[in-house]
Image (cartoon, rainbow, N blue to C red; front, side, top):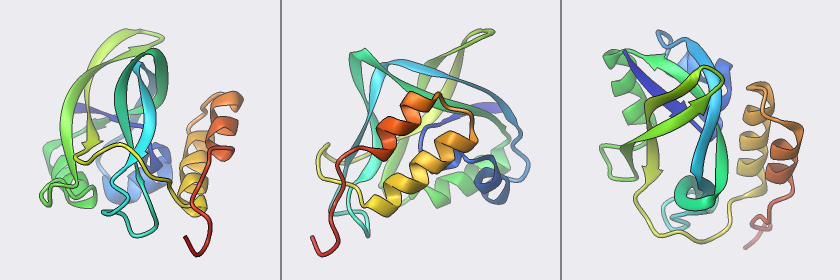
Length: 150
């Protein structure tokens, strides 16, 4: 089993149960030295998509799932890995039980652009359901977003 670190809508355990039914939630943690951002506005249907980039002063809340190979393939399809939208990298995640290695998806596009308000709401709801701290969820809910008609 491989550990997958979800930082976007897959933080929602119910969504992950649909997309990867054999992948139990293990714990939550922090991706230290990285920040949540958005990019690939020309790739997404509603605006920019979530990704993470290195930033020594920041950290990103993540949910860790134990993912068997079959579910990993299904997640690759959901995330557009075969289409080149996202690619996988291995990172170190800080948990209450110590650091662990996990893989996550990063957008294969330039940083920049605004996500839709709907997309940000999905991310904030997922973070809240996963137990992210209130200030982290608030930050997601108050980020700048693309206006209707943009």
